Length: 253
Length: 325
Image (spheres, rainbow over the protein chains, first blue to last red):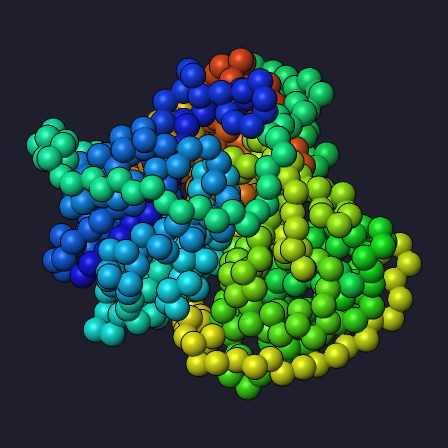
């Protein structure tokens, strides 16, 4: 099985996000970076599939040159090769999907060469909820989003996504696009030999042709902090009668 | 005309659709009216009457013999057909799993931009909108263009009130032109685990644990409290990543977003990833040893102390005071 996982480099934010002076980006001078959580699970899912069924795993990101760190991390987890679509700043979802679609076709001499394309359900930072679906549409492939369980069957995939307290089941033939939710697995921590091997694996850098479509960012804004003071009910088990009163006030008892 | 896509599951309304209609009514009243809504699937027919108080002039009902359960691309094609026929100025859907997915399919088919999880819109030739990033811990102001403009509405931000002066809603059935490819991805089965647990999104009270719980066994007492209150159990990303609590119950940006009457956060520090999942709660009670933890300072109520001492005492007290308990 030939698998592609598309992932995004995002800052690891703390309890409050600081913005740059021009309000166009997050101030990342004091932040680390990581793979967006859904995509880390997508890489793990891809690695498990090639371990069980054979094949190859390519990882792709659209981002700054530094995003090669996240590609190397995915290679250390077990991917075979990587593609970096070098682009700086926020790239809108239509431009991102267009560049990814073009890179996939380029890999296959005009056709999609992959059996399975995995994305995160949504990027942790921009939260556009659309890149995987746009790529699926452009390539004429079926797409299931929000997947938290994935099984290979004789005729394709059986996948599940959460709905209420249960699961919805979908069956799709391959090739297909699946967008993954965190929780489908626990991503492995790359081993030292894995990290050493990753240094020698090929990373192809491509200058993508970006055709923007919107939405057009004007600026980023920190949401107003709620103006309220927490009411301390007490310390330790001595507070229990006050909690019971609160539950009664809220008609939960 | 403003068009709202109503999310439902086999005829049961997703209430986030009503929050979406609050924003859709604003846009309709600002000059882009009237308001129409779309229901996809014959099983949704009964919802038309329930939606009338929310102000749609027309309820479009997409029926097709092959459309028996949820099929994202088919829902999107029904939406695309209706857009071609009615030429709305904007199309809105709730920012739920299905709403986001169907809108993205429609946007791809129409080759138009889509803005996800909007909280406010200033209408005009282009819409100037505010949308949430990082699950709501950061806002983005942006221009959205397109004919029509496609957007989803962030959950748990807007009220879900009925329209002040609703008229009579006319129901107009139509048959979308669906291909086999549109129906390839559809719900073919459902798996419901045994037991009648309350779902996280529907529970009136959610008892949730984080790093401070310390172990899988530590979650037992949270489950006991949730059962006593008729609620559900949740966990932070730390708790689910350690395997103390199932991933299906993760509350946060990459898990479930909830809006219960009361959220009881036990041993959770309140990182952004978690906060955005629970900030929709009407009241938050934090139980934490650290009075400076973000979860404590942002909560409505807090008890400072060790959850392993407080929760067993609370359970015993509830059993004592509850009639017949």
